[in-house]
Length: 479
Image 1 (tube, rainbow, N blue to C red):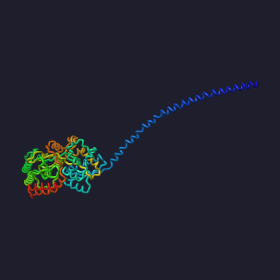
Image 2: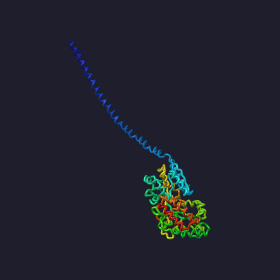
Image 3: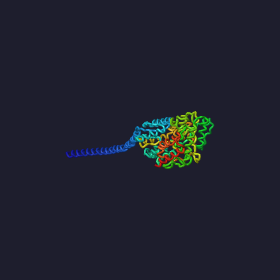
Image 4: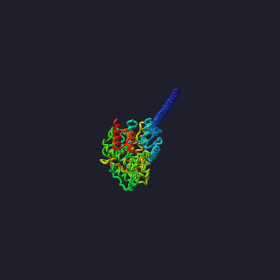
C-alpha cells in the first residue's frame, strides 16, 4: 500500500514536469520570432529613414546662396566715394554740354564726384603749367595734338594701353587711324575725342550779297586774297576776321607742297624754301592795309573769342576754325545765319590738299591722378556712351566710335551734321608727326613777339619776318 502511494506520487510529479517543459518551449520560440520580427522592421525603417538625412545634405544650397550673395558686398566695396578733377578748354557751348555729360555720369555713378575747371585755350595751358609745377594736375585733362608730347616727355601722362587691354576703355568699334594720333613710340597716351580738320567758315549770304563766288575746294592763297578784298570792297566788311598768324595755317601752307611745319623728328622746320612764307607774310600785310582784315592792333585789344568776333556779329565774311568749332560758332552766330565750311587754301604751287584729318583734341590721364581707373572709366563713357554723345552733339569733332556715329547722326543739329558731311567729302593729305615739345614755346616766345607783331606793326618786312622765323625756330629745335 505504501509502495502504491509512492508510485502514484512519482507519476504525478513526472506529469507536472512534462507540463512545465511543454509550456516553457513555445514561449521561448515566440519571443525569438517576435524579436526578429520587431528588430528587422526597425532596422529597415532606420535604413529607409536615412534619405531625409541626404535631403538635408542636398538642402545645403541655401549656404551656397549665401556664398553667391557675397558680390553685393564686393560692389559696396567698389562703390566707395571717388573724387575726380577734370579740366578742359573751349567755348561756352562746350562748357555747357560737357557739364551736362559730367552730371549724367555722376547720376549713373553716385559714388563718383567730379569737380571740373574750364577756360580759354591760352589760359588752359597756363593753368596746367602751374599745376604741373605744384604736382597737382587734374585726373583727366583735355590735350591738344601740338602739346601732349611735351607732357609725355615730362612723365606727366599715364599710358592708356593697360586700360584698353583690360576693357575699361573699349576701342572695339574704333578704327586704328582714329587712335594712332595719340600714340608716342607705340604707346597710347591720349585718346582722340573726335575727328577734325581745319577750315575757313564763310557767311554764304554775305558772299552772295557781294557777288563773290563760293571758294573751290582747291583754291589757293592768291584766290583767298582776291576773295577777301572783293568782299570788303563790295560790302565794307572784313573779308577775313583774323587768325592768319595761326601756326596751323603755316603748316597747311607747306603741307600742300608735300612738306610740313616741322620735320619728322621735330629737330628743325620741315621746309627750307622761305619764299612761300615770305609771300604769305606779305599777303597778311596787304590785307591789313586794304582794310579787308582786322588789324593786328584791334586783334590784340579785342582778344576775339569763338563767340565774340566780327563773323558772329555779321561784320566779317570768313573765319579760320577747326571743324569741331563749327557748332560753337554756329550757335553763337544764330541759327538764322547761313554759314558753311570750305577747305584751307593751298600754296600757289601746291600739289596736294592743305587739309588733313587731325584728332580734334584728346583726354589724357595724368600721372598725378589718385584714381586712374575711375578716370579711365569716365573717358570710356565719353567715348562709347550714346547718351553722352547725344548731349555732346559732335562739338569736339566726329565721334571716333562707329557705333556712336551711326546712332547720333539722325538726331544731330544742322551744324553738327554739316561737320560730318564736310569731313566725309574732304580731300586730305597724310597727317604729319606730332609737333615737337617746343611748339608752345615757339608760338609764345618766337612767332608772336619776334615775327607777327613786328611784321604787322610795320617794324620789319615780310622777308625779314620769314628769316627771323626760320633762324630762331631752327636754332631752338636744334639746341
